[in-house]
Image (tube, rainbow, N blue to C red):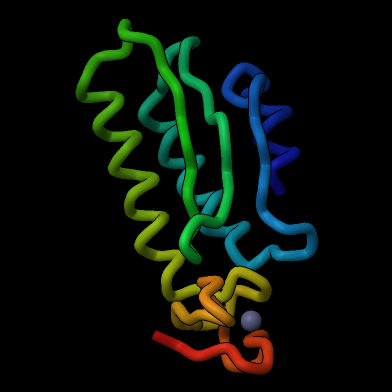
Length: 123
Ligand SMILES: [Zn+2]
């Protein structure tokens, strides 16, 4: 899924670290929708998505831009990824079914009932 975006905007992803575990495709649509919205905002050339990862169980997207980017553009982009992060709390990271945030021995994740490992407890 991300490959299509790298092809479409190679400059956005020149320094990307994609740290979503292999086979965990539940957030693909969420990431896809967020990137489509970013495309509408039309960030300039200095814009980079430097990391896409799961942090404390949730989808976390780190970006970079230089000081030339207008505040309203960078604010819009921050808002888009903040919204995606909130939405990720309800979508199974593995299969995209409705899910909850929980933890397995202190390690947080968003899982539906069928993808939650033994010992996983929703919070
Ligand atoms: Zn699942």
